[in-house]
Image 1 (cartoon, rainbow, N blue to C red):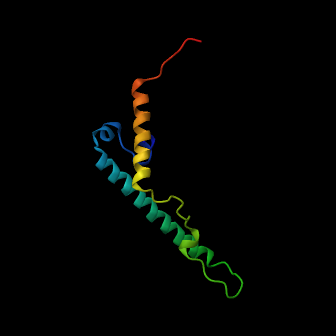
Image 2 (cartoon, rainbow, N blue to C red):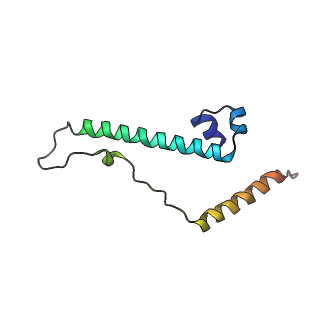
Length: 104
């Protein structure tokens, strides 16, 4: 999460740590919308360029959708979200306990 916040969102540490979860969520969602829009723009340019290349008669022109990756993530239900949240909480508790160093 920190790599994304400091890298992609270009947040300074002080700004990141002053955000609440809702604010951070909206920033991530906005970044995703921007990336989606940029992908569609690029796909439109690619379709226009590829449509200038002669092809066999009767073939359909390229569309921007031909150059966009198909969504692979599926919508997850409430039970799956709850299960993931429980696992994340368990990991957080392990992290809080710290690493136990043993003599070898």
